[in-house]
Image: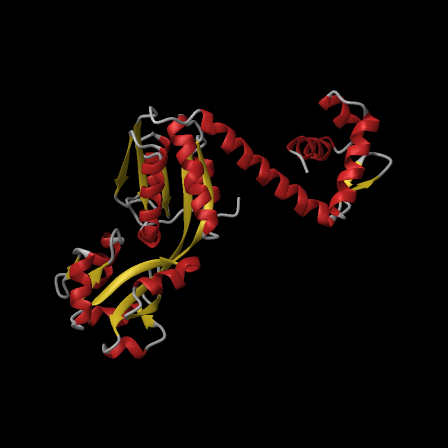
Length: 310
């Protein structure tokens, strides 16, 4: 199997015709037909059905063609390393939600290894993040998107509003609580949001504080946002409940991080308070070398965790 063969087969698929593909590739039709037959014989799978009007992929062929496209994307990325050098400088600004916090270490390490003379900046979770990406204030966001009123937007709504950014769906974010296993609520499989009103809460990093304050009346039950090391000390003493969020796909990873505690999903039972929402991978369509290469690195990382399928 050679790269040239993959390129030729993908061209046959794009053209839906061996004769048209041969003209586009500037090779003879018999030579292209022979190559395809030999390739199908080699892998033992028929990729195309031949018809009078051209060719169409078989069910197995559809999967093979998708894999070939992925292979070519990776090859183009490898070829792009000629653009990458230690002299590549500049800033890259990243906004990342709390549920993807466990990716920080991998992201930072990846950036330092590949772009040692560039600078990675992180910004806090905030409303209208897509607007910040569109205007170039943020290069990449892994977040839900909502406005100042707390209205969450769908992928379609964001795409129609911002034409110069790419939005890829990730996974659903779920609100949860983390408690000491000796805490009375540790026996619960789920916790209703209204049950938390009587608790002293600690917020996880970058959680939507404005919404929590609106519904939990913090003047009566103070909410604390402190360093994670202090959070764990308080959890160890059963003094408080940590209100946090995680990605459904990463629930096992999240529970490993809090292996000494109980992680319990929160059920929405107060009108207006959301306990789950979709998150998106958002970046501008026009990118410089640093942005383009690092966005590809983050995509690769997300695919490794099965968060991103495209």
